[in-house]
Image (cartoon, rainbow, N blue to C red; front, side, top):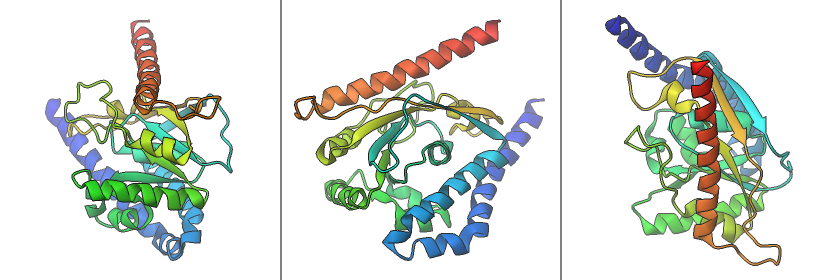
Length: 256
């Protein structure tokens, strides 16, 4: 039985990358046309959302989204979420309607075909280079000036230790939000680790929930910038508490 499960997991993992690449190939002419000019990004974003939803669908994941606040479609935000799986990218694209740009690690640009569009549309950062981190601020301002939002996974990557419930948050997202006057919108993804973690022999099709929490201000009512570290911990606590609530609810449902 274990051998059969391992075969299923291996085939299923390969299928994930096949679906990613095949959908890009199918959409290739439209994706390429949408990145020819900076004004084409909103169209690229719409195509990226179709791609993200397609990947989740063909992997057997069905999404359930809870929105605690309606976002202004004409406003720029900083979107943040817990990070446990490559499917976080697809789920973020699926549930957020405001056009946004990912800030992500430069290594993702090495993924065949996906990396071609990634490095031409996203803000890449080399966390080992201080100059690269500074360039992110300038690039973010350019995108915000064009009416786009920013998305960062503040854990900085998926923790190597899969037992970590929620890793420490890095400052980048909160510094960017404060300096550019963006509200922070926390998102909670409770199922992605269970569905497709970075542990090879694991995962399964099924529900993939997302909860969009109310936006968090980066300035006080008097117009003063809030302390960045306190803001970071406040947002992390919001996400942590929601993840814990989902866990308790799921465990209770299993017992019943």
